[in-house]
Image (cartoon, rainbow, N blue to C red; front, side):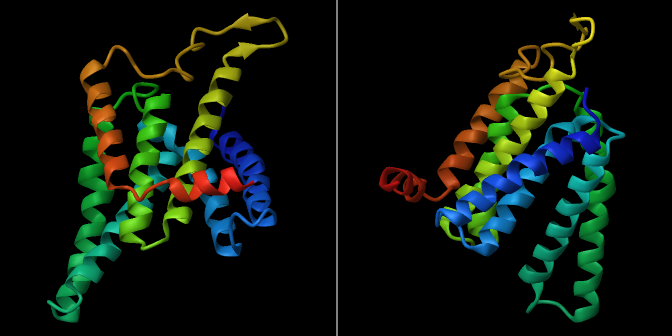
Length: 218
């Protein structure tokens, strides 16, 4: 299995040139280019959030906790005093960082259903409506970010699969086949929930027609 540094480096090496290419061909402005590159790197971490001691889970939950704290400020800005608002934001952050993260760690197993192509689709299905509705980005940018999240996460799975083969002796490790899989067939209920989540995420997302039209014109 590739380590954290390798996953981040390879995701960056592949995502950054693709994001710059989108800028060169007029498919993204400079802000979109930066967001796409960062999304690819973040995607490269996501499959390892089911590893309790991984750097990825700490980074992702810190980002998520910060997002929730920020949203609590926005939602309650005109309804609370500044001191109560500050307390709410701090409480929201620590709620995500500790109780929610602890529950997540107890409910997930490493290289389970979160380490699959289906999970990558779910990451995308969550990212696109989040970028569009919460961060009020346009449909093109939201889908672009979602695409790079999927790209980075898929790169992660491929890397882990490649690291399951020892090229020197052409020996296949026992971990081979546990990374690049459609889903974890041993977790059918969770897989069904993920499929439903993908459907709901797509329903909440803006139309992808803008990208379809761009590729058609090119």
